[in-house]
Amino acid sequence: MTMSAITRFAPSPTGYLHLGHAYAALFAANAAQKDGGRFLLRIEDIDQGRCRPEFETAIFEDLAWLGLDWEHPVRRQSDHLPEYQDALSRLTDAGLTYPCFCTRKDIETEIKAAGGAPHGPDGPIYPGICRHLDENERKDRIAAGEAYAVRLDMAIAMRAAGPLTWTDLDAGTIDAAPARFGDVVLARKDTPTSYHLSVTLDDHIQGVSLVTRGRDLFEATDVHRLLQALLGLDIPHYHHHALLQGEDGKRFAKRDSSLTIASLRENGATPDDVRAMIRRYLPDGAH
Image 1: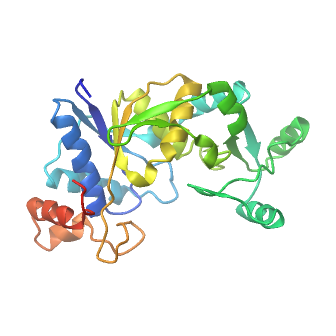
Image 2: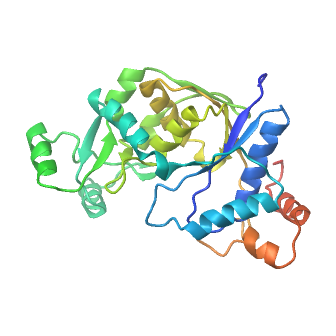
């Protein structure tokens, strides 16, 4: 990249930051600083059922302790739900979405009845139960107050967008293949957005020019590139970095007993100690 990069670290306050988060934050900050760019912090808190104020407070404390500095104000997704709703409405008005009334059990039953379904990066691909519902039935069920999610009609969306590519600084030019995800959910039953929609719109609004994140999200970028095309959003470059792995070979995650920055601090570790641990847990060949 020839221009100064605008990068971001975007954690969800659903638990305490662990070593993997520290690496991701440092990676993003370093990518901005080496080119005289800007480093942003974003709080991705659309999952109000799991997000907690104490975890958000801990995020700020941990990152400051690591020596990181970021621009203010910090964008908090829960403060911008109308913006996501507006983007969703644009897609719906263009005929690119449909309401899905399925429960998880409905989807599982349909997949079993079909003899199994191919698995996409998000798990089993949605089998399209609600895709061809009569429009009057959709309106009646919505009017009756039935809960529903909003899905992107992938086939129609891909025809509208045409062939797409995106650039990863390690992997080069990538031909986007979002169909592997099926009809992704763009809005949940309890909130007007989902990860795919909110993160793509946020990066555009904040002017992020280089998205740095873990390799586990590499394939998801295909969906984000499609949404950029459909909504007329800016196209950043990407750099998908390695994931830290514990002694068991599994990546660090909030759901297990991974080392947290807060516990390391309490036990007397220094920021330099954390950086040394990061180097230790990086896969061979990563940097």
